[in-house]
Amino acid sequence: ACILFRPSGLFGGQPFLGLLLEGFLFLALQSIFRGDSARQLVDTIKKKFKGSLIGGVVFYSVSNLLMYSVPIPFLHPIMGSIAGLIFNVWLAIVAYKKS
Image (cartoon, rainbow, N blue to C red):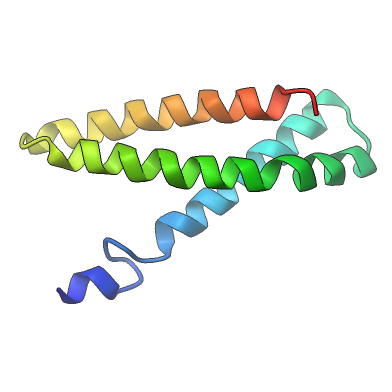
């Protein structure tokens, strides 16, 4: 039970902080690569960050429940990589969606 509450444990903050960083960097870099101005960059982050964060938390909650319900341990990294790929495609759709 102790592992559940450690920072690196199952319900710790490390995955959430990674999701925050990934969502922020992805949206910011997509805006920069589109050639947006600084004002457009801030506007994009304000409009899309909350939705991408909520979507990521929901997606990875369901994804991890499914992944760790599979009794074959060597499939977990494969399933995690596929889930990451699906999430990044969804995040790209969010980043390119017109506001």
